[in-house]
Image (tube, rainbow, N blue to C red; front, side, top):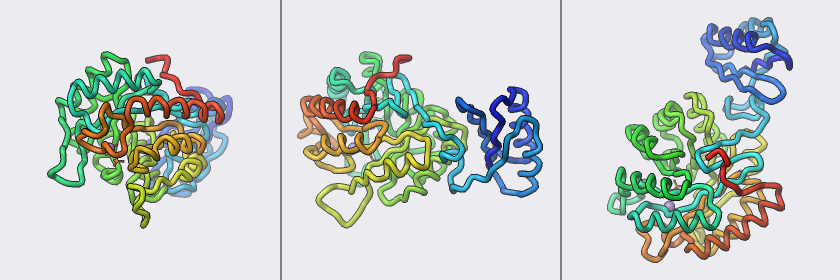
Length: 343
Ligand code: PEP
Ligand code: MN
């Protein structure tokens, strides 16, 4: 249910209603909008709860939330959520540009990439220290050593660090170094990991599972939100279909679809979504045209020698060209690529 407060409801009335919601055994998620405050009351649905809450002072109405996901839905929060993490700002008119290699390989590779993507206009740095690889014989990442390299790259460039956490037991460690916790496609429905990231509180980039529906993605986000963390970005990175010419099928219709249902920002990853360097810049531009709030792009100093995903990585020069193209499309759709000024 949503407890919609009246426009002029006082702080005391709002706090009182939050307490009433909790007393009924429901979880409260207050959302302070520019127009009015609403309190999402999540838990077992009972008609008498609705009647009891409706009589509260300062309450305009109590309405059921129709979507299966609750806190993530536009019904609860009609204004777009803007996620900030260091230099990164994603959502509404702010387009975040997250760039960097698939994996952190060594300090030289990471620092040179950080400098190059920053110079080209990226607003955050990516790089996996814990890699979820299909084969146990593939490079698994440098783990904590990789996190230290990422932190050094942030210290030098000021770029926020986005890096993946693959297991609940690593959340605390990764959060010590990262600005954004990335939950990979393979882990989208690892509910204990989602809850652990929700409790940690740092911004989360949640990638869509290759066979997950939109509702499943939104319900996965709901786990993080319901654990108390409102800083969630969704990431479309393509799904598995019968088509084999691209690594995955990048379904860009999900961007406007999600924007009609959720206030959470939507990031697009055309690197994994296509699996081919040559296809990345145009799909990045298409994603912005479709309304994406951010992009995640794999960039490597020498894609040919990359330890993972070299075939879909851009060189520094290619990334610079992509940025030029993206800036034009961003301007055309009223979005701005700029670092978070508060960083
Ligand atoms: C990645 O971003 O490097 C990655 C592993 O992506 P995904 O989880 O989308 O496969
Ligand atoms: Mn990758």
